[in-house]
Amino acid sequence: MTLEEYGALSTEELSARIRRAKDEKRAVILGHNYQVPEVQVLADYLGDSLRLAQLATETDAELIVLCGVWFMAESAKILNPDRRVIIPSKDAGCPMADMATAEGVVRLKEQHPGVPVVSYVNTSAEVKAVSDVCCTSANAVRIVEAVEGDTVIFVPDKNLGAYAASKTGKNVILWKGHCYVHNMFVPEDVELARGEHPGVPVVVHPESPPDVVARAEFAASTGGMMKLAEEHDELIVGTEIGLIERMNREFPEKRFYPLSAFAVCRNMKMTDLPRLAWALEHEEYEVTVPEDIRQGAERALARMLELS
Image (cartoon, rainbow, N blue to C red):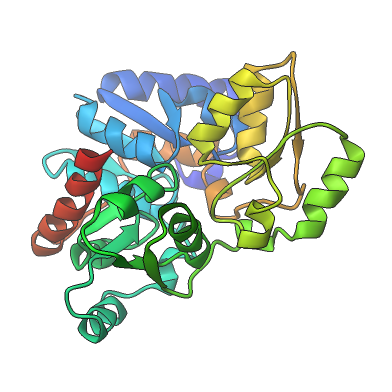
């Protein structure tokens, strides 16, 4: 069957095929919080980037299916070189990750000798390989605080780097990258949401601009946002709408309001049930990382997990 033929199957048939193939191939499905609801429901585990990285090292599955974007599947392969890792949509990249190159990071290191490089997991394996340690939005502050010295280079998200700087007091040299979804938020979004939902606390992702973070009660990764959803009956949520769909499903008695209904990551939405079923049954698309790059990237990721 072609991918187009999978697209003509019903949700029930696709779900059944996915479950059957997963059992037959001893596969595990890891899904990011921004995936479409249909994929979220079928994932064995849901989480933010940190949780997915941790899960990738804990599973004993023979096949890891990463429903997310390319750098996430690449990270799973880096940490599991002896296991097959596939991603259902090979075109699901990350524009922010594409904003940083290994060559550019090396040049920046040469300009600042001895300054450690903290690279966000939203980077390529090549960038990770020339970094000292990785971080996620969940542990960026902890990682920046933990590395030696008063100055660090932070790649590639300028907003997350600025957030870590504000919390640690360190001098953070920022790469000029950003997440196009979170960077779209403006202070007026917060004020408008507060006007529509008086008294409801606002949580935003630390990839948001500093003037937006400053106006929110909380800044948290998607994993942190899920913990806040457990603790509050209502929240205004400033992140990709996929997480709000998960919140509504897991806490139907509560109310969650998007800071912007336009906060949609096109790349995260590339994975759907037809692609997931096709990928599992055909074991495509496999992610590979050259061993010399993998070893360097593994050191940076392992250091992150050690400090987390």
